[in-house]
Image (cartoon, rainbow, N blue to C red; front, side):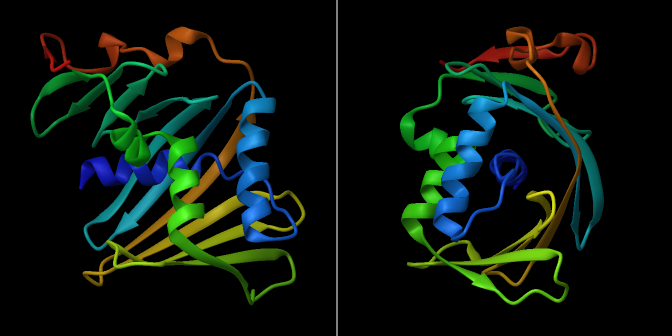
Length: 201
């Protein structure tokens, strides 16, 4: 489940702009990330167990997620993942299939290929809503994306899962800036001293 949460956060971080159609919007989002040099943001994810907060950073196909529940760095080739459950850092070299679940750009392509998308009716004139439903049976039953019409920024995402659980994610404090490559490599200061690092490559 922690891996799923990382996937959700990182793929939502790519959705920065609105367009005339949902498909065009996703394409424009990817282009916006690549053209902007990099982006950072804050997030909160709410489930039936409570709310968790964290920070995300992205640049091209690289990303970083920092939260109390999970920390993950991906530099475009190598991935470092930490969880308080295992109390260790695992190093992996993700395959293309793995990246479909963890790489934001690949996740967007996954949505485009495997979900039906349509614009949904918004409760306010300032909100642009996209509804996504899987073409085949999936863990996600319905995904709702809420954009601020005036800024073209993703404000909220609501994942309704097949097991009836619900994840609500809010994204705030977007900042565009060029990020050093060290942002996306393992930072031992972010994990407890003495944490074991396990190379699974």
